[in-house]
Length: 158
Image 1 (cartoon, rainbow, N blue to C red):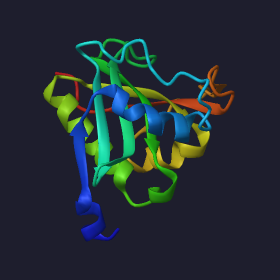
Image 2: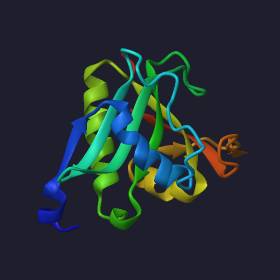
Image 3: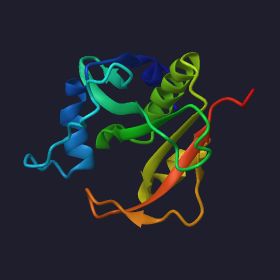
Image 4: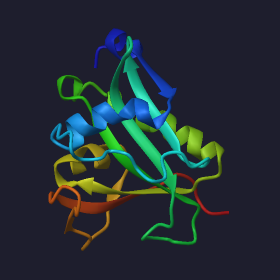
């Protein structure tokens, strides 16, 4: 990865509405009739991150407190709407946003993350430390695309 290009990316906490256009384009086939708002978007505990080049949002990631389907006793957040714009995929921007988000969440006492990861993105998640839950394959009710449940332990239990 070119450090100069990587350094141009700024990771910011943002209002979730700033992520909607990227969510729709990348995750919902740019279909304007599909809502990309989550009912939890405005909850005080929800956290939204954007990877920004100039003024353009190129990465989105939203996190919501939620009980994990694995190790339900751990303080857990769910990752949703992780998306990297098509023309900048493979540059390390998504992993940089995730790393900064994870550091922030650890500071809030979060021990674990979970998500429904698209099968086409599992390689990315595994490369950033997530693990696929065996036997968790399913079709997303929203997209009808194959997914697996993925988890990432952020800190060990005390």
